Length: 88
Image 1 (cartoon, rainbow, N blue to C red):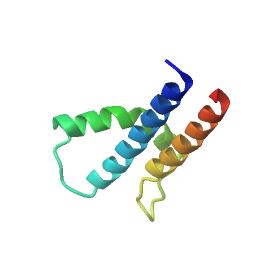
Image 2 (image 1 turned 45 degrees about the vertical axis):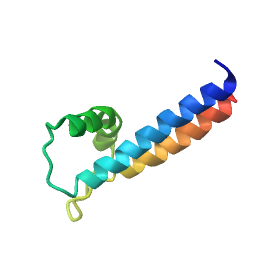
Image 3 (image 1 turned 90 degrees about the vertical axis):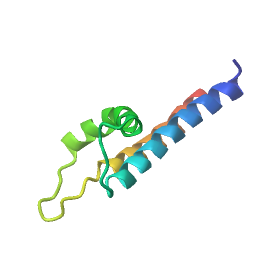
């Protein structure tokens, strides 16, 4: 496997994670069955990223919004860029 393929694999992995976080945010606005196969798949992949952030980022009582997906998206973007710069 060459450098180009490694770059693409890392890039695609981060893009998929960011896409799944966006999908999860969109799903949160609609009623859905959390035990559905696709929904469970999305939750299983995104929860290990979002859960630690929820413990760190407080939810304001006056504005009950979960900011962890936004922070996770930004952190994934930064981590992707740093990782790709270090490797290539």
